[in-house]
Length: 267
Image 1 (cartoon, rainbow, N blue to C red):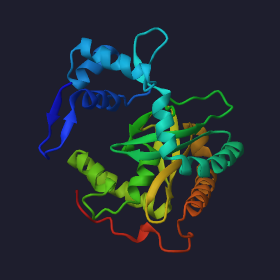
Image 2: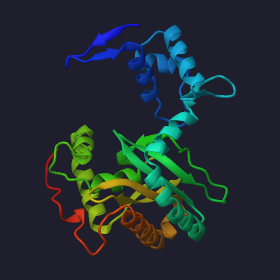
Image 3: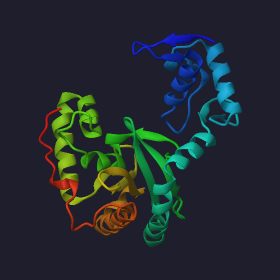
Image 4: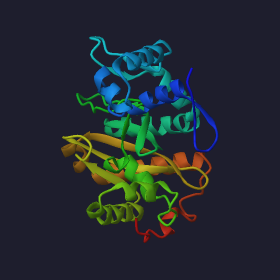
């Protein structure tokens, strides 16, 4: 087994590194073909197939019924929800309440690098479905949950997710995103109006632990229904997120919140 030495002096097992590259290549819920995975990770198809087969045997990826593509498997979801079980278990009763009140899709996610990772989804009983599935990742600044979390991270700390995400945007988009995130901090929730998926609107609000945003919940549905009930949904969602935050140890809404932090730093 090939072992590559990193510049830090630590040893990295090449096969494990490539297997992790493959897992990180899966961002879209519709999955990837063997050729697409091979191109993204820079391996020939034979080696890519062997790694995918091994990951599939362990449940970390799964092959579609027609064999045309691969997706993240249930084991990934199990591992993610095991690590984040506290927030999922605390949030679920509030998510159920939101779904019962509005009969729209309710989502729970956390930040995962440049993306939001969906931990839990409650479907509406109406004939409406989003492309998002538990375990999938979406670009943070294109989702209401991602913007809700980014907005409440410190903007003057180069190590913060806020700074990292803003720095990756084209320069022409940074000022617009700064203003949008500042607005999110002022009103307490974020909107996604067909930015991530045509015909779909989402309202998202952050969840805090003792000191920082650690997740977010959103209510999603067809644009016309979400916009028609925007105020009621936003108020109920923020109340639910505050309750989850309190249950996770965050101070009450009457105490100091991150809104008071500066967002003037330039990326």
